Length: 579
Image 1 (cartoon, rainbow, N blue to C red):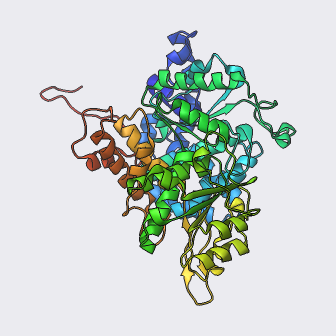
Image 2: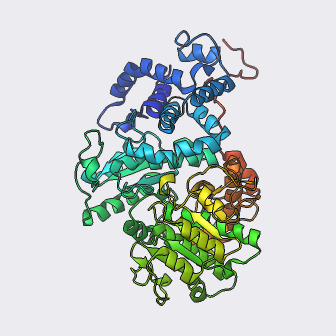
Image 3: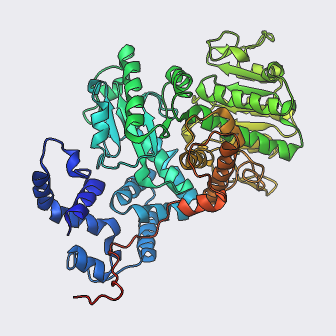
C-alpha cells in the first residue's frame, strides 16, 4: 500500500493525519514511519469503508484479501441487510445510534438507505429524534464527529482548524448549543444538530460530505442538570457571556475564511435568540453566512402560506397573521412575509400592520430593537392567546414558541369559527413541543384547516372517512438547496432576497402545503437551479466561468452514492514494448 494512500485513509477515516504537514514539528521520515505503523489499522478501516463490496482485484492490490469473507457483495445486498436490521428496531434512539454507526463505517451505504427512505428516516437523523439524541449525547457517545472549539482555545482556533483532515471544506454548520430545538441549553450535547444538518446537506442536495464541517463552540452551559452529569462532555462551567465570547466568535469566523476561503458557507444553528440576531446583523455583509433558525424557518413558513394562498385563492396581502412566540423564528418569518407582501405592491408599513405577535408576556406592545416593527396599539383587553385570536381575528396562526400545546382546543375552535379555511402552523420542534397535534387541528375544524407542523405527524382519519396527511414545514425543504446554490455559485453574502427567490409554485404545491419528503432531492435541485440563475443575473456570483446550462452543471456535480473504484488507471504507451 502506498504511503500517500495510507495517509489519505488514516486522515479520512481515523482523523489522525492527512499529510506530513499536519504535524509541522515532525520530519517527513518520522511521519512516514508513523504511517507505516498504522498501515494495518488503515487496512481495517478500508474493510469497513465499503465492507464486502471490494472486488477481488481491489482486495489483492490493497492487501486486504483474506481479511474479508470471500463473498463479493453488491451495494444492493448491503442496503437490504441495513434496511432489514432497521425494521427490527422500534426505539427511535436505537435507530439513530445504528444509523450513525453505519455512517461512520460506510458513508455511501448510509446515504443510499437514507435517500431511499427519507420520509421514514429523516425524523430519525433529524428532528424529532435528534433532539432526544442530543439530550443523551454523552450517554450514547461512540466516536467524535466534527470539531469542538472551547473558550479556552481562544487565540488558537486556526491551528485547531488545521487539525481537521479535510482541506476542501465548503460548508460549516456551527452551534454554541444554547437553544437546541425547543429543548434549551444543551452545551456541547448540541453537536448532534450540526451533524444532522450536514447529513441533510448531502442526502437532500447532494453536497459532498467531505466538504461539510460540523462545529460546536463550547463556552460553558447554564443547564444545571448537565453540570451535574458525569457523562457531560463539555466544559463544566457556566456560559461565558463576556466580551471574550464575542471575541471567540470573531476569531472563529476569521479563521474559517483564512483556512477555507471567503466564499465558505457558514450556517449558524441554534444560538440563543439575542446572539442569533446580533451575529446575523454583524456578519451577513462580511461573510457568506445565514441563520437557518431565522431565515430558513422563515422561508419554509412563507412557502406554506403561499401554498395556502393558492388553495384559498386569496392573496397574501389579504391575510392577517398572529404569531405565538416573538423570538428569532417569529421575527424571521414575519420579515419575510413583509417582503412578500411588498413584492405584491403593499407598503412596508401596511404589511407590518397585518402581523401580530404574542409571547410569554402577552400581546407585543413593548419591544426590543428587533421587534419594534411589529408593535401595534393595544387592541383592548387581551390576557390570553385565545383573547388575542378573538380580538385580532387572524386568518393564520403560527406557533414558534417551543412551549408545547398552547393552541388549545378553544383556540382551534375559534380559528374554525372565524375562518372557512383557517391556517394553523404548529412549527415548534421536537414533536412534544408542537403547539397542537394534527389530529386536534383537523378534527376540531372538521378537516377544514390548512395545517403544517415542524415535526412529523401521522395521517389523520376523520369521522366522515377522509384521511388527511399533514404537511411538515421542515427547513430541509430550504437550506440544502440554498446551500448547494451558494457553494456552486461562489456567493459571498446571502441576502433575504435569496431565500425569497428560492420559493416557487411548482416546488411547494402538489396537493398539500408541502410536497412529500420522498421528493426532497428534486425539490432541492430545482431550488438550487433557480437560486443560481438568480445570483448570476444579479451579479452576486463570483465563480467563473458562468455555466451556460446551469441545470446540467448542477446535476453533474452532485455527489452520488455509488462506490468509487480503488483500482488505479492502467494503460499501455502506444508504440512502446512494456516490460
